[in-house]
Length: 138
Image 1: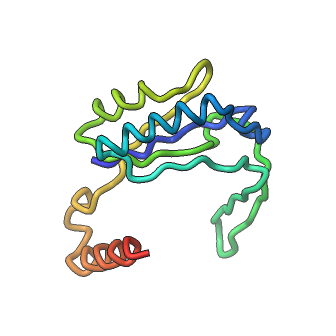
Image 2: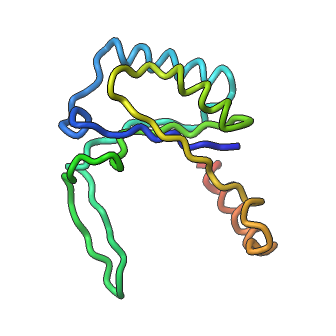
């Protein structure tokens, strides 16, 4: 099972406040533990929304809004992509993340091809596998 671990933004991340050396050191150690356990697939921090944009699709013409966006609990400051055996294992790992007061993360399971059932035809499955192989080559 793959899980996206979503690190929620707050007023500090949205203001562009960079993490301290201590937090970067602790995060590096935590990331190394996940790599050594064979579960970390990816992980990155994100710039504040002031450097981003949103695209809303309604009707024929998408509309673009450039950041910054109001700080709400739906903004993302970073993420990990992990592969574990269960949600409980993901929770156990993320309880060890070196965050302190006020930080919040969300865990969401990533769809696997078998989750789509018969709607994912053999042709679509082949296309998915081909595209994944192309991405892995880069």
